[in-house]
Image (tube, rainbow, N blue to C red; front, side, top):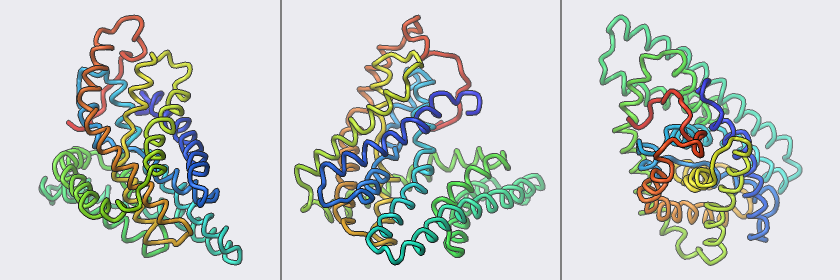
Length: 337
């Protein structure tokens, strides 16, 4: 990733902030009941992408590896980057409603985004070293090595929550750290993510369809549907196109990457945090809009993943001079093996 960072970095450092900004403006214009910070909260919830619905894209080897890798890396990192932004927006929305408690909510938000990473890094470093030693001395079998990744996530989450940090940020940072401290666990994590991780993802979508969609179905109207469609198209695709200015990518490549920004687990989790942790006005409207966006994404991205991948593969199958940027030589990172 350090060597092949150009496209993912553009998506994360240019496309992501632009998407949050454009999403905030769209939410503010379409939902008059949402003030500025509430609109920003909604934007931060619906911007993170999820590669689960683009599985047919990131595993299709007819699609240039540079494009697949950009989509995969972006979806793997943008939820962790969006979470602190979401929490700060949430705290600012709460503070704006209750000015007398501004100091408390700013302090709370700071603790969430500072203590969470510190706990995650500490857990990832210490436990990564311990796992490395245990594996070297053959004190741990391969099956338990796979389960250790789940244990690390739960440990980081629980420890961060105990000290006032955010558990999700801690788990994210623990993963970043342990991957650089203990290489031996990475293969086990890949295997775990391929089977058990996919199962957990499917269970989240099962709960989403069985429980969350019926909760909001009566409140979905034309404005909500319109916002969801704009979130999946304009709010995503325009910033992606802007972020790739100067890269010599063809228009069809920019459209392809822009379209495959499905919304899924991260949006669902953020919306549940909104309902459970911090009460702000308009949170039911925010929750409904977020769930509608995921529902539309499941439908549209799920149906289009395979045929769109085939169409794009035909467009770029031959590494001609026109598609030289798409077919640039790079080292393929292991994902969804």
